[in-house]
Structures are given as C-alpha cells and as structure tokens.
Image (cartoon, rainbow, N blue to C red):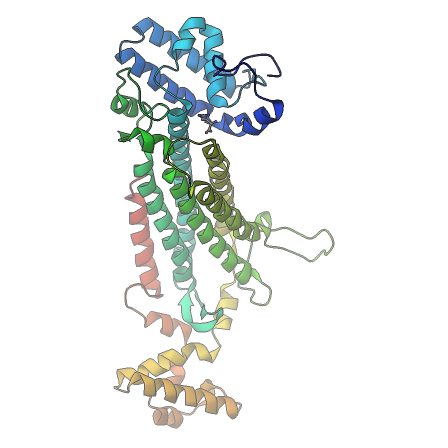
Length: 463
Ligand code: ARG
C-alpha cells in the first residue's frame, strides 16, 4: 500500500494490492456518504456483541463512544482518511481501532462488510426516501393550491396535443398531482420492504457467536431482520425498486415539465414562468427560456439510466456477495440527489408560474372543442352515437366549406341539426360545468378532487 499499512486481510497475504487494483476497488469517495449510518449500524452491532456476552458493558460503552467520535470527526471534516482506506466501513473500523487498540479489534466479530454495507445502504435509502416523500408532498401541495385557484379557469384540453374538449386548468394541474400521490404510495410501500436489517448474516452464513438479528433490527428502528443470510447479503431488490420508484417519479416530473414548456411557448402563450425559474440567452436579448422545466424533463433520462444500470448489474449475478455489488451505490445516490434537486425547483416553478387565463379562454373560441358536446346532445335525445358523430362531422364540414362558423348558424339550422339552442352550447363554462360526473373537469369536481387529494396525502403511511 502506498502508506505501508496492511489491508483488512493481511494475515493470509504476503503482497499488498497493486496500486491500480486498489484504485479500481476504492469506493471511499462515494461511500463516505454512508458514514453516519455505518456508525449507527456498528453501534447496534456492538450491543449485539454485548448481549451475546462477547463484550462487557464497559467495553460496549467505550466502543460506542469511539464510534460516535469517529462519526463526528468524519461529519466535521476532522477525520484523516488514509490512502489504504478502501471504503467507509474499513476507514471507520480503523479509526476506532486507532483510538482503542485491542478493544477496537473486537468490533468486527460476527459481521462482514457484506451484511454491514447492505444494512447501511438500506438505512441511507430509507432516510432519502423520507426526504423525497416530503419534497413530493410539497410539489403536490403547490399543484393543489394552484388548482384551487384555477378550479374554474377554462382552457382547451388536448389529445395528441391537438384541441379536444374544454377543460379547466385546475383539472389538468390535479392530473399531475394524482400521479405524484401514487409516487408517495410507492415510496411508502417500498420502505416497508426495505426496512430489513441484514446484520448478523455475516459474510454469507451467519456466525457461531449467538448474535440476535431481531434485536439489532429493532435497535436500528427497522421493521425486521433478514430471514436468510444468503438472501440478506445478495438482495439488492430494495435498490432496484427504489430506482424504479424514483424513475417513475422523475418521469412524472418530466411530463409536468413538458406541459410547462408547451404552455409557456409563445405560440400558445398560456403561461409564463417567473423570472427566477427562467433563463435568458447570452446572445438574444429578448429570450426567456424555460430551462428549469427543460432540465426537469432531461433529468428523468438519467434517473431511468440509474435504474437500467442497476438492473444490468444484477441480472445473471449468482447469489452471494460479489464485488460487482459495490456498483449499486452510485446509481442509488445519483437518483436520490437528482430528485432532491428537481423536486424543489419544480415546486418553485409551479408556485410562481403566471397563467394567462384570458389567453386560455380566448383559445376556447375554437369551435371544434364543442363538437363532442353537440354529438352528445343528440345522443341524449335518443340518436345512436355513431349517427350523432356522423351528423356532427357533416355539420362541421358544411360550415367549413361555406366559410362560416358554428356561431353563424341560424336557429332553424340548429333545429334541423337536432339541437335547440346550439349556439349557446359553444361556451367553455357551460361545457365544463355540464360534465358533472365524478373525475371530470368541472370547478366543483376540481374542488372535490383537491379535498380528496389532500386527505390522501395527509392520511398516507409515511416511508
Ligand atoms: N465497499 C464494498 C461494497 O460497497 C463493501 C463490501 C466489501 N466486501 C467484500 N467482500 N469485499 O460492496
């Protein structure tokens, strides 16, 4: 080793690792983020050793204090890492051993980095999951607040990004919030499965030392201990599932972002992002670009990539610990970091975006938006829908060919068509108000949905 110290397995070896092999294997630069949870897991393990009679109470307390002190040193940047420290687990054990000598050397009894690293990562991801849950809630609440404000704001609803039927802005905003509520549900369900301690599994086959994994799990505030030591050290489902949940959430954010980009496009002009969430151009003075939304859209690609990386890493890997598994952490950290960056930016963008309600209403002058309402008016009078669809299509075609608009039709023409008072139906407020069925765009439904979503969020099992 560059500094002459021996690695953890020096007894059986006569040659230290080659510098380039050590460089390849070193994970300290990224797994240093596990320091706090590694100390917590190590303290729980110390208590297990004490319960098993392998440490007396004084020894356990001394080890616990040293672990906490090393943890503080790392957190405050005082800890001196050495080139030989392969990962955070070995660095912390070295720090403790340097403080305590022989007593420190008792710490690793009955455990392996294999059961330790997986417990650490579970603890770290559970904490990240709780932070992400809070950030998703904040964005959902911002959407709900804006939706309440715009419960009755009419706008063209689209399919294929083409004008379809009138909706309310509140209804559209809540569609995004409902998607986020499913992310919250997924996070909480994932966290239940993830809250499993692997400590006691050792390298692959537990130990002969009489440790109590259930007690250790309880000390860590985890729901349960592993049931199979091989599964305990091999399982990375919890990372893969976290990445799947994160990728789905990032996808939702990207779709919200895509709507913001579209609405703020000057050809629609339905909204403008606050300056604080826009950027100018270095060359074109007039520009106001939706970079925050574009980045939220683009970042979804990397989170999806994180999921794919981990899935590729795991598929075909036999059970047991393999060093390949060290590659699980960077995608996990990256996905959590990305969500923690994008979510608050989108919350800010949504809270401050200005909607041009007049432009949205003006766009509702497009008469095609009311074609389905006209066909349904015929259906309510007993006309079979296919015929109603055809008759309405023919009416639109005729009006188009005569270079007229539906608003120009006389009452006789409407009567002939089969809808009395047809002209009054070309009205976005009337159109949305008439869709009273649950789940629809009327202002009343939007307020009902907002209440229901708030109740769902408030009553959710938190991760
Ligand atoms: N740094 C390693 C990882 O992240 C810790 C486990 C090492 N275990 C081993 N058997 N080499 O996976």
